[in-house]
Image 1 (cartoon, rainbow, N blue to C red):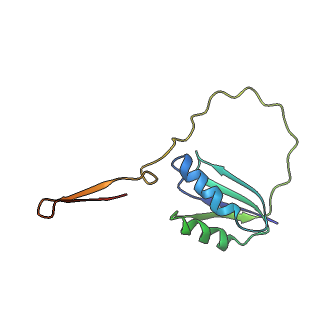
Image 2 (image 1 turned 90 degrees about the vertical axis):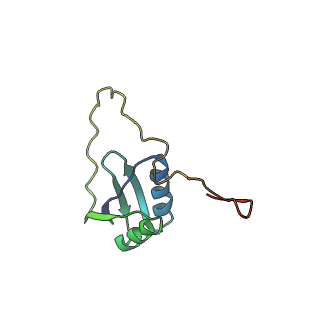
Image 3 (image 1 turned 180 degrees about the vertical axis):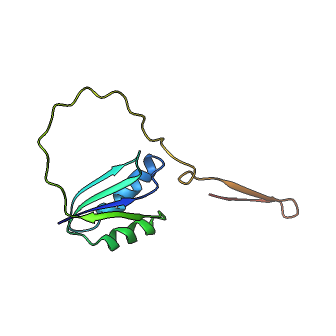
Length: 115
């Protein structure tokens, strides 16, 4: 059992969902968490860190391993004060949006569009 912390560019909600989908398909994972503000992915379980990095590279993310080690034992819960609103991630970023490109040829009279 080990805890793997990986730094990944998480700019929007779509990025966060894509990272979670890619990593949770691996076997041997007990817990996965994504921190959008810090841009970190934390994986706890019996999984090879190289496989996690390969999965993230397949979805065109640039992962950097921050730390690998045993997970810390859970601390006793303390009463938490009421949190105030924390800004959420935007629904999509420039990397995740589809851009339509149109091409018109005056000689052929055709219109071609690419998404």
